[in-house]
Image (cartoon, rainbow, N blue to C red; front, side, top):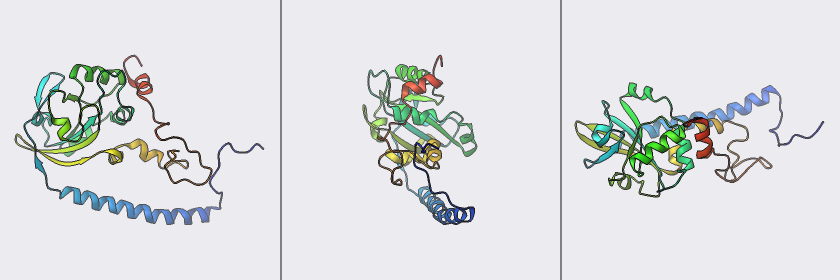
Amino acid sequence: MSASPKPLPPVVDAATWEKELAALRVREKAATRELDAIAAQRRRLPMVEMPDYVLEGEDGPVRLAEVFGEHPQLIVYSHMWHDDAEWQCGGCTGFTSQFTRLAGLEKFDARFVIVTQGPIDQALAYKRKVGNTMTWYSTANSSFGSDVGAPPNAGFAVNVFLRDGDTVYRTWHTDGRGTEQLSYLFGLVDLLPYGRQEVWQDSPEGWPQQPTYSRWAGPQEIAAAYGEGS
């Protein structure tokens, strides 16, 4: 019999496996409780009032307060944008491609949209090119992007806002790996025996590991799978 092309976890009897799983479950449950506590602290954060920004939407200028639609809460993903680039940030393209059914947020009085520094016509063309289904807005003629941690030609971020009448408040922000909690992909991949297979991860000796980002689907692949003419 030929050797396995990849190393394998140890093979044990069912009782030993159940014991090891139970030990891991203790840590998993503790992590769940900690995430609950973090969410509770997040709900108690203060907030800051925002200026009356005007963004560009598919149908023209729109005030930030109007982006909420009929809902009092808003999640905004700031999509990194590089002027005149054929393909925009692969991480942002891949991240946002995961969100295809957002109607459930309406049950929780919220909306989730994308804003980007690109001109609205280019932004909408890119949206169609990669098959994105979220609603996009442009901050090309506004300081909104820079003010919430996503300046031109650099940066991506998630921000949450609360509206009271026509007044908008910023309640939460994250960037970098903080956005992972919103992605289902890594949640699934982290369940796998080999995980993300990236060099920074703590894996057993001999486990397959490759350069960071090397397994991420690029924007061209996403466009081929979901975009116009796919």
